[in-house]
Image (tube, rainbow, N blue to C red; front, side):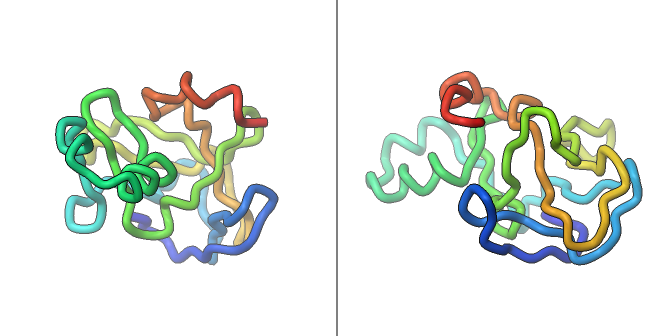
Length: 129
């Protein structure tokens, strides 16, 4: 769940996530929260409709053991290879988190390098610029 106020706006690659507050460097801005975020087993995906599978393909990511679906605006994080301003990592207490790589000003788009957290990144890396 996002821990800061955000908005979703049209951007360069469809919709994009923007911060509505200044974010200090290293501040945790997203943390997995089972009340808002959903873990989906790979086995359960086979029982879904094609429409449901397409939704998960677009908005969920894989940690190698299961799919993770963010229910809030976090699903609008866009990818950047070099200019990403957020880091994704495993915190010893909170688990999967996203933090600010640098100071991020209000209004900036929030971006991550999907390669840091999505075990399926190699399958679609060639589609990203």
